Structure formats: C-alpha cells, structure tokens
Image 1 (cartoon, rainbow over the protein chains, first blue to last red):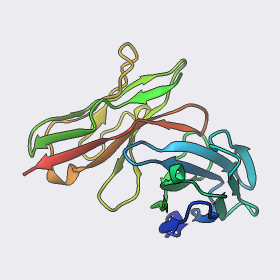
Image 2 (image 1 turned 180 degrees about the horizontal axis):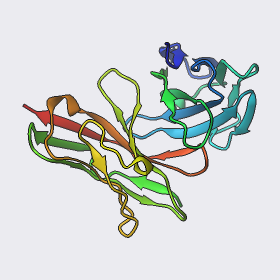
Image 3 (image 1 turned 120 degrees about the vertical axis):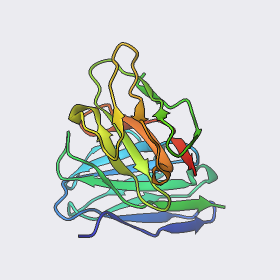
Length: 114
Length: 108
C-alpha cells in the first residue's frame, strides 16, 4: 500500500542546469497534481492531469517548466535552465477521481538552485 | 481574487489549553474549504473538510460565510497536535488555493 512516491527527495542544481522530478502516484489514481511550495509559503498550483491529458497548466511559472504523464501513471516535472527562484519543494499529489475525492500528497522533492 | 489568509505564522499554547487556528478566505461563489496538516517529517494530509461536518482528532471547523472564515478549533490541545496547519479552498473541481500555514507548537 505505497502512497505517492517522489524522487529525488533532494536535488541541488547549478543555475542553468536542467532538472527532472519524478512522481509515482497511487496505483489507479486518475488525477495527478503538481504544486510548488516556497519556503514559508503554502503550496501553489502548477498543473493538473487527468490520466495522460494535461487539463490545466495555468500555474506553470514560465515556459522553462514542463510536465508530462505519457501513460497516465508516472509523471515528470522538468525545469530547464534552472534559476535561483526555482528553489522550492515540488509536491506531487494524486486522487482517485476529481472533485470531492481526497487528494494524497507525496513527500516532495526539495530543489535548491545554487 | 480568490485568496486564503492565515494571519498567524506561529501559535504556541500549553497542553490542555484551547486552540484556535484562524483562516479567512475571499471567494466569489460557494467554496469548499479544507484543513490540511503536516506533522514533522511527514507528508501533507487532509485533516478535515467543511462539507463533512466531522471532528477529526478532536478538531472541528465551522464555515462562517458571513465572516468568510473557517477557523480550526480544539478544546484541549495535546502535544501530538504540534504540526504545520494549512487552510485551503477549491477554486475549481480540482485546484486548491492555500494559505501560508500556521505552525502550532504545544508546550508541555
């Protein structure tokens, strides 16, 4: 009964480097979310998938951010040419459906850009 | 604009004392509100949602539409309640808008 799994848990990237963050949702969960949480702040919505379809990417801060979920299961959040302001915890979450289904969070990927 | 405000970054109370974590929101429409909790070195998890009208771990929260508030309350704090607490609302069928969180410390 594994929960949402994220990797890497910690990543230090040099400014300008590309990073890829992986999310393994709970098996069978249709909905998948990515959130960004800066230090001392609440999570901020990035993007939402229903199966393999990315239905909402309105929260992605720039075109350096890209997310995919090609087979409707594992998702990858890619950040190109990282900048210091990208330093944050990236949270992945999944739910069985949408609407009032409970959302389950992963432990997050802590990204530090130096 | 839709917004969730948690005015206290830190709240410290003694064990056995009442706890109230404040949450105010601005939203045009009928929001669905939640409290999430994050214990030390654990992941975010749902504590309660207003539509359920339930008490979880002794916590309750009542939606006050007149005051646009959804304060979290517990009559007698326990040490294991120490955690980060986040108030959130749904903007659409899936997107959550979050407050900045309140760190609750229960002193022995």
